[in-house]
Length: 206
Image (cartoon, rainbow, N blue to C red):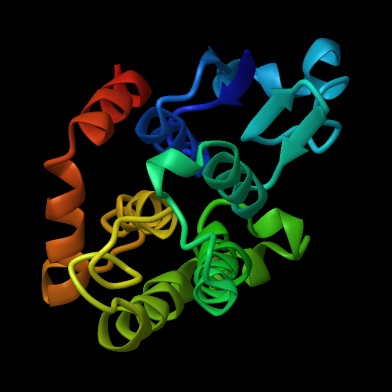
């Protein structure tokens, strides 16, 4: 059985949804960041980055959302969560998820994690002030160029969709108006109609 570590309000939501959509046999372990569970010795032995998500498998521990999402898709091919038989389409999926991970999430992190990049309080405040613009520009690009159909890759739901949904949930806190992004907003509403999404969102907010 897989063992999945997550914390509410984090990008772990994407992998948690994918596990549920795949019908995986897994145990979910909730960490409380308010009490710094992620810095406890037993968790650092699993993931010394002190972050989530982490997925304990029979072969070892995986971290980083794009890696977990692809692992889940490849481990449960019958769920058809990625275009595994089309190497170019799979690379496109990875390109999208990499953009979310390396650019969009980082832009969002400047709101509350500025201390990762600067010590000067003025610089940290400047980073916070920039978030609505930087995140907004990322989502403008996603809205206009990257969503290919009802789902990110087109007609078929994939591992890109729970990841985009997860970051879309952060837009209000980033002072970006989701409803002004027609494709993004429609995608968000479509995701909320999925039973697996409803179930996992409830677990993360309950």
